[in-house]
Amino acid sequence: MTLLPSLLASIGSVSLPLAEIGPFGLGPFLIPLAGMAFGLVCIIFGSIEKMQKRRLRHELMRVALEKGQPLPPELLEESPAKRGRDDRRGGLIALAVGAALYLFLGALVPEHGVKWVALIPGFIGVALLLNWALERRAPNGQNTP
Image 1 (cartoon, rainbow, N blue to C red):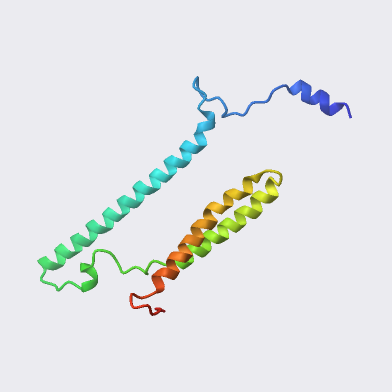
Image 2: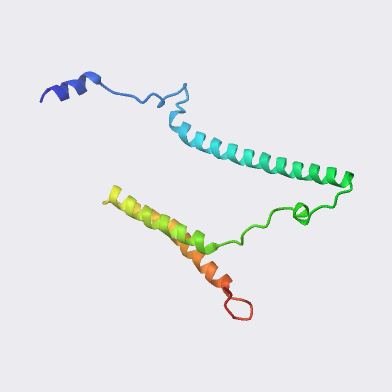
């Protein structure tokens, strides 16, 4: 039984490999910075893809007009027809995330009030559902499907 304390004493202090990178100690900031860089890269690639699609569509329209072909109406639309905004779906997802976060944080740290952080996505879900319910009403007071 005395083997474990003597082993721990011989190890001494253990440091994490990325805890102190360089003279400035940037180790703790690497993961948040990497996450922000990843988000920025995703936004940049999404914008580049959208520009490429727009450029190809304009090139196709130019070639069709040069050859005297009629342009289909789908090609003239700036963006494809999207499904209407559905606050009901987003609200239900936010409520589910809030409930799961409440249960997870309550089980993880039961003695602290950390689980109340789950109210944030929960209230966002309630607001989205309320917005969906209010937008369903037509101006004349009749409900729309």
